[in-house]
Amino acid sequence: MSFGSLFLLQTEGVAAFLLIFVLFFIGIVLLIIGAKTIKIVPQASVMLVERLGRFSRVAASGLNIFVPFLDKARAVYWTNTRGGVTSIDLREQYLDLPPQPVITRDNVTIHVDSVVYWQITDPVKAVYEMNDLVGGIVQLTITGMRAVMGDMDLDHTLSQRDQINGKLRLILDEATDKWGVKVTRVDVKNIDPPEDVRVTMEKQMTAERNRRALVLQAEGERQAAITRAEGEKQAAVTRSEGEKQSNILQAEGLAQARLRQAEAEAQAITQVAQAMQDHGNPAQYLITTRYIESLRDMTKSNNAKVIFMPVETSSMLSAVGTIKEMFTESGAKDHSDDSTKPPPPRQLR
Image (cartoon, rainbow, N blue to C red; front, side, top):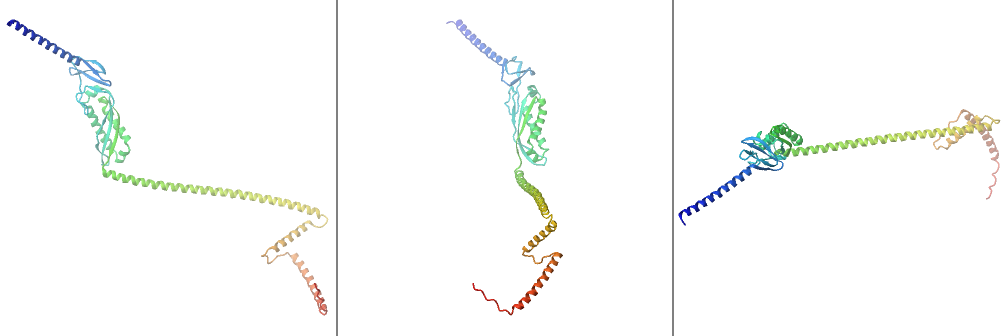
């Protein structure tokens, strides 16, 4: 093989190598150009396209065509996110803040941790209006929490979490509106007071519960006494009403009995008057009958020692006494006459 042919073979080899190298280089360049030209954006995410360092447009989810070496996706460097991320998530996100020291109005230091829910509504403002969006939300939440709880006592801080959440949400929503962020919810998870304050609060709560128990017991006893008094009152009223009705019925019964008795006496007097029209005065008969009945009743009594009698009766008794004396004198004479006579013989049975 001559030197010329050998040189020709070497030249052809170099040319082939250069051709392969050029084709490989062109392929790599085409791949790079294709990677820079075609961008696929995930769902619920966007990319901010910058052309020569100036904002150009917002690339929505799906397939997007970039001008290579002119268009570039803007990368973000936010706290708690992976650095250099080009896609911006439009979904609602949350930030779990670690416990932060807060001083209340009564100079008690408490540790509060909270959760903030937020969502990007304008990605252009979120990237260009704030350098570190997540860090800004975190610092704004901490300062707002200290401002809200610093105006409240410890008792109100522990019992009014809903008001604290509402005030914090308003503060964050107003401050982040110009950043293109919507704060949807703020929740205070835990409020931890110091140990000595916690022990004092437990003792205070125990004393308060005991006081409420005593108050409830006293109130129950008072209500029971009132109920018993009302029951006794109603019972007394009921008894009075019953006695009243009983007395009324008894009086009505006595009145009816007296009326019936009067009617019976009227009928008896009428019959006596009719029977004694030709035999004397009926009134005198009735009076005498009543008088005799009264004497009979008085003699039946065991305690009756003295009997009062009218004047006519005493005159009648005096006459009876005179007659008795006459019979006594005649009896004495007969006895004196008979004293000389022998006693009659005793009869045998």
